[in-house]
Length: 108
Ligand code: FES
Image (cartoon, rainbow, N blue to C red; front, top):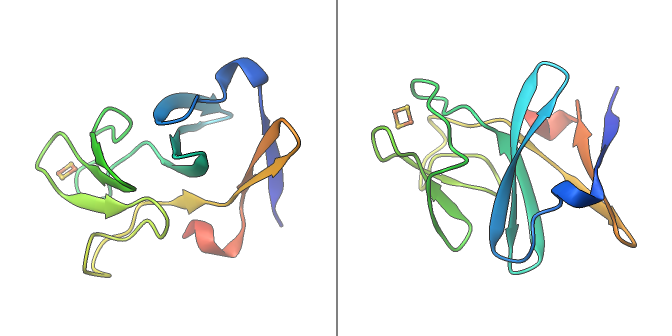
């Protein structure tokens, strides 16, 4: 069963920026890359470092801790399926942005 988390308007990241969201017991990083939104767990699947502050190139986020890089769209380690960060579909209805929690592709 999935739940759509409505992101408060003040928290929606402007183009080419990111925010950290705390929702229930989760920390999620929400990215806006060229007006496309991506939501992932703010926890690197390697050793749990925060990914929100990592270096972003296109839609690839690099973990600050040991440099692993993940595709924001799939959650997978770049060029590999060995590691995956939880990723969540993002839906927009007008100005309202929703993160869909608990869907199949979240990898939970
Ligand atoms: S904790 Fe992210 S690369 Fe090691």
